[in-house]
Image (cartoon, rainbow, N blue to C red; front, side, top):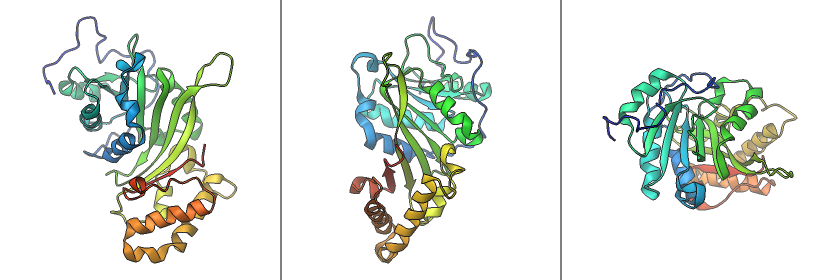
Length: 289
């Protein structure tokens, strides 16, 4: 990183306030490597998107929305993603001017920080290929989730991703929505978000208890774990699947976790059963689409 860097000639200053930034400051308590496994997920899930250099993707950004009091998550993601695409530009966005000011000394030509909210502070001609908004929407009302997604998606290229969710303070367990930017089935071919997956992650340091995932569900699900809702049925079935496969606990928590996923699949949920996901602690379900 280049501590002495300043915005280039003609560039909008990073602290220039966008018109009516949309959103509220988060608590900002971000531990180092809190979102490391979110990065790992993206690299496994769609590395081609991060590598793309054709057309508008040549300069398209990865955007870390609401990185917190310190710029750790943005800098760590840049270090990981720029290994597979050295030309990838990474932008950290914060609504708190003091947080942006603290981050500026760590900027360089490919990794930078700007003041903004859900209406992303992209400059003329800039587009995004992927967005991450973690531990941001949890403080909002459920009714605010859809509008926030749509605001963030306005400058996302077709095929781009949004991963939005919640983790515990150290990132040892998290849950997230994965959405894809696609053409609407209308004559105007406008772009919309299509929900692609609901993802759960654990590193097993807290053991494996299905109920723990309910506490860190994204905002659009967390208040819906009640009878009559699909997410309630999902968790009831996952708890039953975990109980059914509990004898596998003898061989370790990862084996038990994988067996519970297989039991969920037998109950009709489109859960991914590839070992590359389950052995790392990822449970991916396309059922919510």
